[in-house]
Image (cartoon, rainbow, N blue to C red; front, side, top):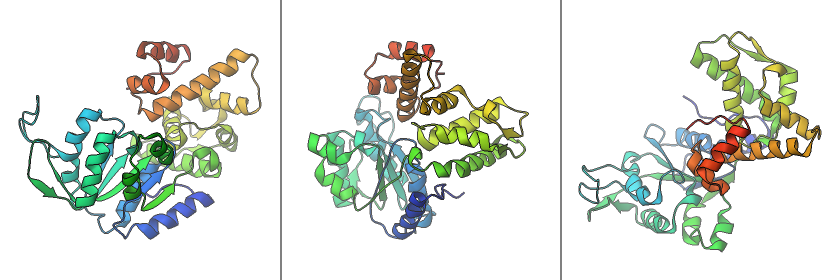
Length: 315
């Protein structure tokens, strides 16, 4: 299966060229960009084109794993290393041996874990939790984050020495709102993908529908667009073409918002809140507890907000 990031805009053509240049080398890569832009897809394509392409590609979302469990997740642990360690466990570094370890949301890693990761990058070895035996690792590191790491360094929440270890070849994946000319090709690719997955005949998309999609701000970026295409396909089983009428209210509302077409201030406020909550839910990978933390709300309060705004909960 190919993992080439989709898009023919100038920004995406530049990224394709850079990936082809950096892939053959073992240098660390730092991919920047908002959540949902396709950073993991870019990382997988680098791996696929590299000399490690036949070896494992192992992704780890550093922001989704509790800080006290991340060390064991990355390095593994020995039986009895801590309460609950009933068996020896192999970590992600060992699973990725000879291949690529993709550290997503590296900006969410605790300072304590940053120190441990820096040591691995420097010495190319590590120990499982509860062991004194060093294991040599042959792993390429590709890291990604939606955070401003230079600002995090200034704030003291990210180590400067780790940043320079990771930042050998940096590049940014632009948000979808800055490359809307890629929307038609993305929609058609997703229709083909989900058509195969669900055994549906090939669907088309009308120019009017594409015009509406082009007016949406896409706070969740490519992931939001992909989810929308899947939802439209599922909810319209007899349609052979996506029309404007098939698009969900969020997209229609965004198109209206760009024309300032709100009847009341409350409608505008609700639309903004809905988009913002959806963006944070996307960042949290649909984990309501995590999204509540990002929003500074109690979990129960967020549930009530989502219900009031018509946002379905999928965890």
